[in-house]
Each structure stands twice: as structure tokens, then as C-alpha cells.
Image 1 (spheres, rainbow, N blue to C red):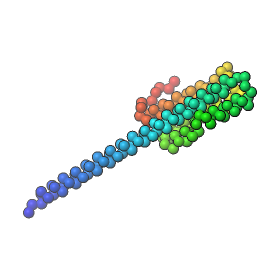
Image 2 (image 1 turned 30 degrees about the vertical axis):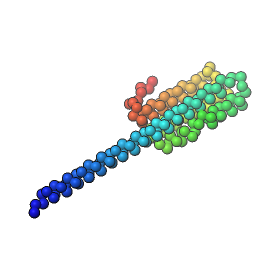
Image 3 (image 1 turned 135 degrees about the horizontal axis):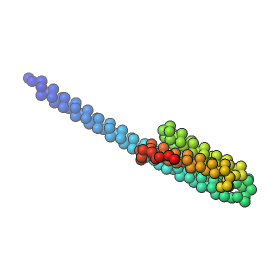
Image 4 (image 1 turned 180 degrees about the horizontal axis):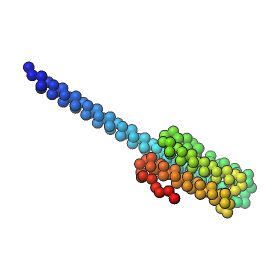
Amino acid sequence: MSWIPLFSTALGAVIGIAATLLADWTRANRNQREESRTVRRQLYGDYLAALSLTRHHLRVAARNAGSPIEDKARLALEAFEAGGAYQARYQVALVAPGHVTDASTAAFNALRSLRDLIEGGGGANSDPAFREAQQQWAARFAALRNCMRVDLGLDQGEKQP
């Protein structure tokens, strides 16, 4: 009796099983990466929208030039509640890599600085401190968007001014 046909049949079966397992493992990893990317894309979009909405509410508070400082301070505080930036920030921190979380924190802190200026009675476009805070916010927000795009593989990053 020859062992060669039996051996070649067994070897073929092992190769077939190994190839199938490798293909299934590769497909499962790809699906998991795509699902993770989809979740991050949704959270990133929600967070950017929350920051933008918060910024809009802060702009409304700042434009109440004739209002007493207490009213502007109340509107500035309400802007953070209405915008939902706090909640979205913590969700992003759970799933984002470190460089996105760092950019998220920087953008959030820049937005909070705007809020603090408005609470203190500032917010006029003629105020140099307010203009500087607005520029810081815009730069941090752009950097955050860029980090998120790179993390999602949408581009290799935009040129920063």
C-alpha cells in the first residue's frame, strides 16, 4: 500500500482548511476595522456639530451687547448645555486615538475660553482678547477636523497655516 496518495490528500485538506480559516480571519478583521471606523465617523461628526452649535450659541450671547453682564454670563453657560459639547467630548475620548483626543481637548478648551470671556462681559469684536480667542478657537477647530480626517483615512492631512 502506498502512503503517497493518503499523505497528499491529508496535506490538501490541511491546506484547504488553513486557507479558509485565514480568509475568514482576514474578513472578520476587515469588518471589525470598518465597523470601528463607522462608529468613529459618526461620533466625530456629532462632536463637530456639537462644538459648532455651542459656538453659535456663544456668538448669540456675545452679540447681546446691550444686555447686563449677568444675562450674557447666563447665555454663555446655557450655550454649553444646549450644544451638548460636554457629552460628545467624552464619547469621542472613549474611541478616538490619542492625537484626536488631544486635538479635541484643545478645541474644547479654546471654546471654553470664549465662554469665559463672554461671561466676564467681553465678546465685542473690537476687543483684542476676544478676537485672539476667536482665532485660537478657529485654529484648534481646524486642527481637530484635520486629525479626525486623517484618523478616518479620508486624506493625509491638510496644510496648516
